[in-house]
Image (cartoon, rainbow, N blue to C red; front, side, top):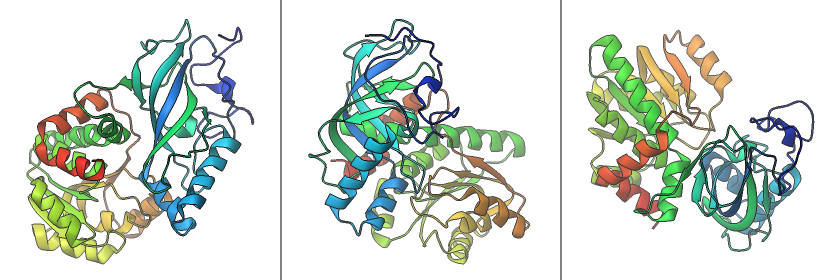
Length: 350
């Protein structure tokens, strides 16, 4: 049933606490009835973003029952999944249940889709109390419904990949597309193949970013990981020219590890970690005139800006906002065509 009321493609009509955009709003209206340009999805799985899940597990002493209860409470009280500490959420997988007559998304009833917009602005209801979730993994099996707006973005799931793998890829698909753009622009501007450093290179967004950097023509790709175990996995995947081990939260350790591997600094640095306090290391490891892409919801953008100022670092800093035209297709292309990327994803989502 469609609601015969004025709607806004940004979803302003779903905001319950003032004239705010849905992402900034404290509460959203998740009722199942549709406005004309909306789509209702029967939700089957959520994918919590890594920074949010890390914070929740840490805050609740890794007690799965407490983490599960915390996520339930957030969704019930806010009408969406938005971690109040990190401000981040994730995305979802489900089946299109109803399409409003004015929806511009091109979806049809029965399409199995992944949302490519954040759960922080997606009206959401969960019906099963997350009873099937272990309280530890990023992927959360559940039953419920969600609403997509006229300006939402979603992708139909491919037939040739397992759903859990597709969901994991689409959760971070903005990262490789942006890295490809930045590396290509750097090559054009400076007429040289840049050295690219990826912090958290063995993770989902990290492994896609190193593959994108190499495909875009990086002269050298350096992957930084926190443990020897992750370094071994990354070396087996054969995605980087150099793999270094350092704690991304320790600025001098990051600087020295990159200097030892490259003899200098990176031209492009991509931050793909799920913990805070990694801004200083990224700045110190990046050469003047270089670019840092912060593709982590754990980033403090004030710390990044003030830190760069305090170090007199002439770097361009970009926020990875998760959307680049064609981003889902490109990320899936990398998973299909680069065996090392797929192996790292399948290790996380067997």
